[in-house]
Length: 57
Image 1 (tube, one colour):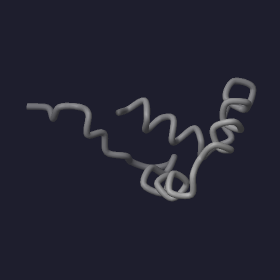
Image 2 (cartoon, one colour):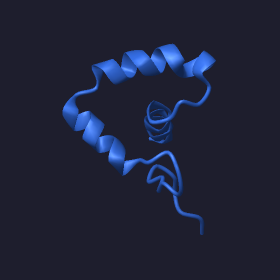
Image 3 (cartoon, helix red, strand yellow):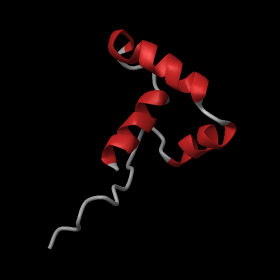
Image 4 (cartoon, one colour):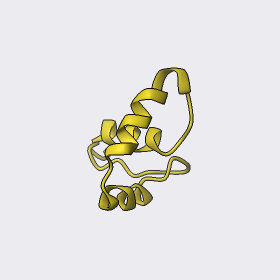
């Protein structure tokens, strides 16, 4: 799940254009309207909960 979250972050930024620019452009072009709306749930700033990790005990 963390890979999905990080991918969603990269789609919303312009960071590292030499590495991610071409991928970002192709991926953005393929997003449906619903997928674009879901990006709001994972803003590339601040805290994002990672539900795939077990809580510390």
